[in-house]
Amino acid sequence: MGAVQVTYGLLQLRRRAAGWYHVVLGARQLVQARLDASGALSPGADAAVDGLHVASMLVLAAVRRSHRRTALLGAAHAAAWALLDAALTRQAGPPVPPGAVKRTRG
Image 1 (tube, rainbow, N blue to C red):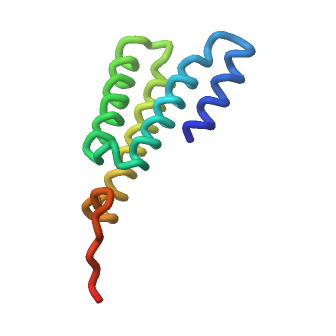
Image 2 (image 1 turned 180 degrees about the vertical axis):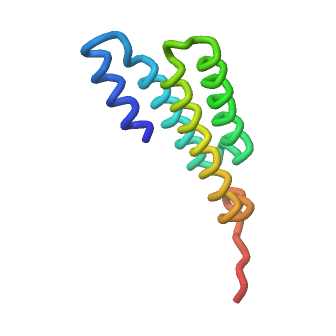
């Protein structure tokens, strides 16, 4: 999803200066996904990043009427990712440290 955001933002920047938001958001999603995949980002930190995004979009929606619809859509998008992360984390169980052997029933 981050790569799509970055690509869309770059296409928007070629036409007008309004694509910077998509480039920044997409880059954040790519970095967050990479850190999450490598195990460097805990599920709590992952949820906190998405929660900060939701909070910032809600503040923007309250302050700037002209950006309210976009900000609320951004907040809903980030909230959906946070819920999906929480559901997948619960389903997967506790993380296994790198190099450790995961015990299973035989």
